[in-house]
Image (cartoon, rainbow, N blue to C red; front, side, top):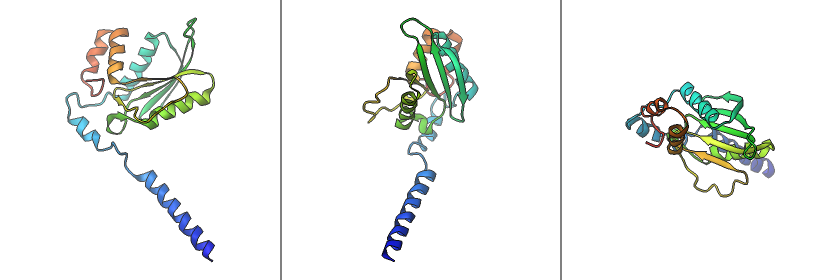
Length: 175
């Protein structure tokens, strides 16, 4: 009887933890209110962000092999046939995140996907927002993090001036 009571309490505690983890708000969720009050407060529309990422990859001489879009991000597999820098790249373009902050789970998910792929040479995370790298440690696979500031610089360097003017009306992009 004691075993049944102990096991029941353990099962109830586990279910409670799963419910809290599933339905609790993201810690950065309230930061969205602050971000929307800043100049350039609207987010870039998904289709424009998707097109920007693809155009930038093509300008960097990466061929888009496979693309999959989700509610908050676009996942791309790209490849390069260059002699020394050729290979397969897994690209995550994060369009929208709680509080406009990209934190550890996004980076770790990309690193895990690169590690699991086996053929991927590098993972690339692209977002118009800030990327927090606190506590990441050694990811064991090469991952390139392109935050808003670096994304803006790449657009300025590799795409036309009209694209740069377009970025000024949206939040993020290192402004």
